[in-house]
Image 1: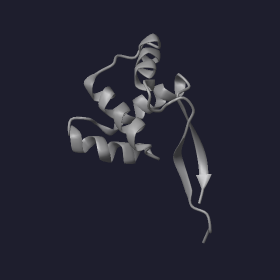
Image 2: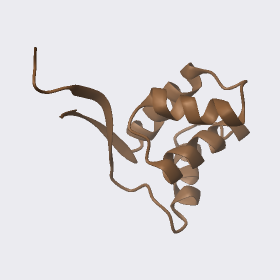
Image 3: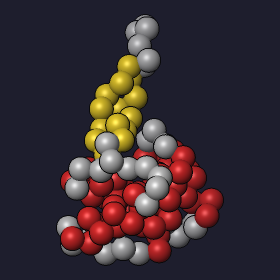
Image 4: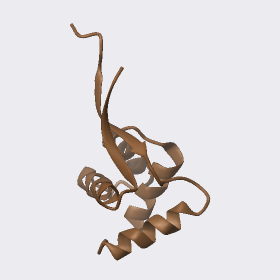
Length: 94
């Protein structure tokens, strides 16, 4: 049995945060061709406020607010945020 437990969806926050960063992230997403929907704004709010460590954790929190949001929507937004350089994934061992 391993002493370390991998957390493959740990996010290292580069530029995301409070103080008006949400608006600049939305602008970058739009520039990258991403439509900004109500659902994506909700997911972004969860990510920025709660500093979730996995897509499953983001999904668990956002589905409490809107049950129509699917897991794929969370994964797609996270991928877009990676593409624009707002966050990056890193494997971290505990």
